[in-house]
Image 1 (tube, rainbow, N blue to C red):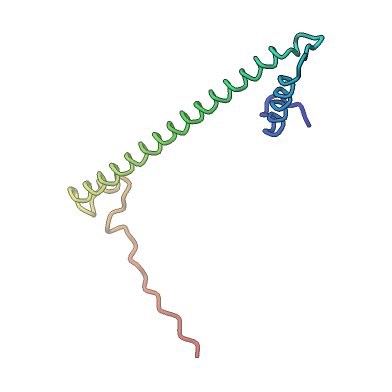
Image 2: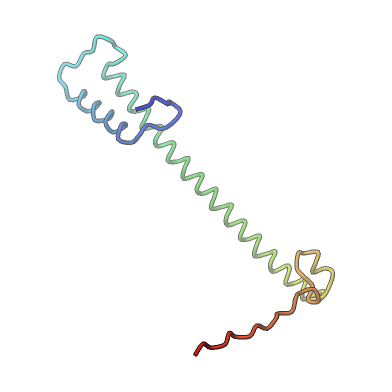
Length: 123
């Protein structure tokens, strides 16, 4: 397994580390020679991980709520602009220059539909 410390660790590896921590916690008399690997140090690291995971979850929820607010505002703007364009059509008429100013085509500039004949039935 690579050691790219900028990417998240696979979930199964994180769980294996927590399982090892729980096993160390259950061992009577675990006293490592190096205090950096003490049960207290591991416990502090596990608590740090839990806190970071909770913060990540809250941040993700806030991001999703912000995205929902953006989507709602975009659709509210869309609805208002469509209604305003219809008001321009009603006030100034379907063949006015004002129609073009709001992004609509004049009635006289629209292509007439061409009639297409149905294909002949094959006998």
